[in-house]
Image 1 (cartoon, rainbow, N blue to C red):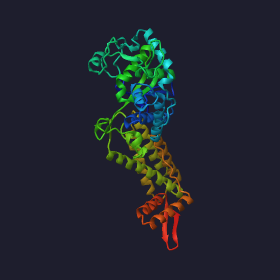
Image 2: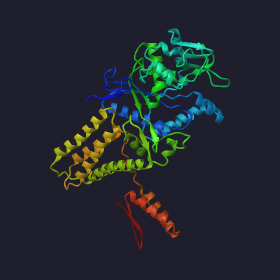
Image 3: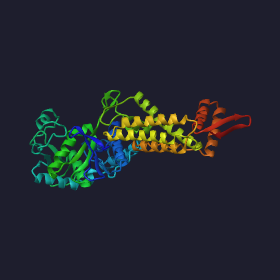
Image 4: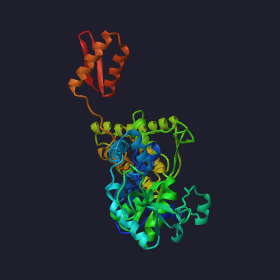
Length: 466
């Protein structure tokens, strides 16, 4: 089956056919780095990391680019408030970003360009737009003429006149048209800036992705992705300025993920429900958070609520337990079963259902349902008196492959060394002498979870591995 992708540009699912057979050029809009990312920022990172993983699973060679916006108004304002230089602030939060999304199982992109490393490319791009008549300078700013670009509005499916009436556009007497957007901003006193033909200034927000995508991936890319909120004006403006310059389609497939709500309300600082990934992964297993987000199709809204997260934790636990039980049986398995082919067929069927779900616009919700069914099959098989190594290994390998596509690899339990066990037993004895029975029970439970069984005898504590 061919992969089908819902294309925001056409508002329908389309067969995925990359420009070059076997290769995919993919660009995902990254964060503006002036704070820790919130779970709304994390959703596209998780969603499109999973898309990339599945494309690679299907044999594509994916070049994956995701940018950092490391200069803009919010960054400058935050740096001033904290008394930091802009590069110092952005570097700090770029590293925090890598830590947070790394904890969520997201791999790094092949390239993470920063706009401050492409200033000359931005200037050259804008100069060509001016030369073609699509941009103009006004008192040190440079604006894009939206009405000159015939296709403006085609991504958000609105006419330019509808956008003029409905959009919240910052008024400026220097602009020729209300929808004209800034490509280069004249610097205010004391702001970080670069020298350009139009004076000291810095890039506008929309121009950077067009420039970096073209520099790193070429005039036309296969997939451009980001959050639903970027459809207009950000991605609309990217299309306009890129296609005005090159005369070629900027991206063949546009993908946008849905919003995250908190307890059925829109997440916002004013409501006090702003959830930072940096904080939440201290309370929730990051794998559970990823599993929870993937349990909903990427284009649908996600409601972040405690009971739903707990349900996701239980679901992930069911899959982990089935996998672990297969491993336990494999350690003692004797090849005396007689339904080898039947069970291998059942396992393969669940892998096919997983692939069919992912081929259908990366439907991770249905893909997870196939993994749940695989776990149920594993539990049924483990109730058989006679099992076979080949079947157990097929279960194990299928679990690993499918969960790896979702960015949820199984964790091998770390076995405590004998010295560590002895130290914990000594700590437990000390706790009991001090009548700290809660601590003593906690240590016993910790050891039990590691497969260490304790026996209190007249000669002292004996222990063994289960």
